[in-house]
Length: 325
Image 1 (cartoon, rainbow, N blue to C red):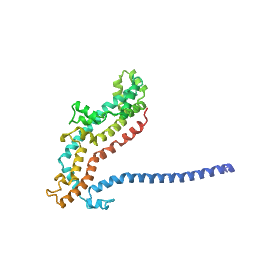
Image 2 (image 1 turned 120 degrees about the vertical axis):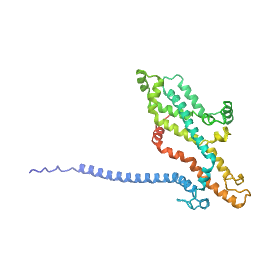
Image 3 (image 1 turned 90 degrees about the vertical axis):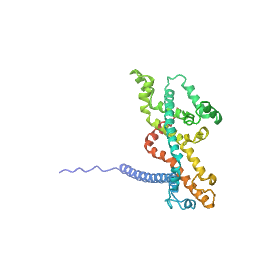
Image 4 (image 1 turned 135 degrees about the horizontal axis):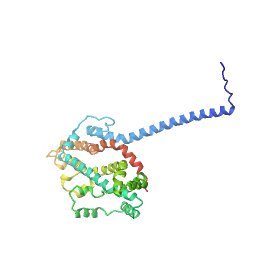
């Protein structure tokens, strides 16, 4: 049996292998420290952002005196659901939920119906006057008519005390149009539309059958942004709506919180007695503190529940639409 003796290694080869081993060891050590610092930073960010949310949750079911005394840190103290009972026992809460849901769904549909066709048209190079239209839209981001002219316009349109007073003003945002225009420019190239035209497709068919199916990330992003704005809307409702049956949830919660914090409201929070004695006022203040935190949870819960299902599209849409041009 013949054995082969390996050739002797040169000094240069030994030095090269040694430097590689040292470089690998140093690189691995640096990588480990980098990962540790990244982990510590992410944990710190989660604590800074997540703890206030957690505190609101536990404060909404804790005794208000314990919250004010600083005894509530990580877990609820003397659990009570009086705040939620007062909030959900208010008859207007469910009407506000219904109205906010209608305003959000219809408003998002109107927003997408206006923004998507406009943005697609502006992203096509063969559209005549697209530069002038883009500058006209950009101008609206810098200047607006103001509150009084807008109110007069809404009144003259005859949509006061209707859901359209909340939905139509600001239905097509300039920022949304510019971002979506950039998305279509990057995602749906001109060559794709030209190929569709060769096959006999019109511009409308190209938009409906090619551009829209490729635009789910930006559609979800626009819907989430605009939907959150409509769900949290109360200023337009405060100005344009006077019929309580049309109040959105945020306006109902605002009134409920104001009444609960005002001991002279005559039992609006259900706690102050007619004689306004000290015990009733103390109970009113206690319920006001509970209602304050419960209102935050009630208003935010629907968005917190729906966001995880849209996060994948939302992240992709933000990244793709982040370059404007």
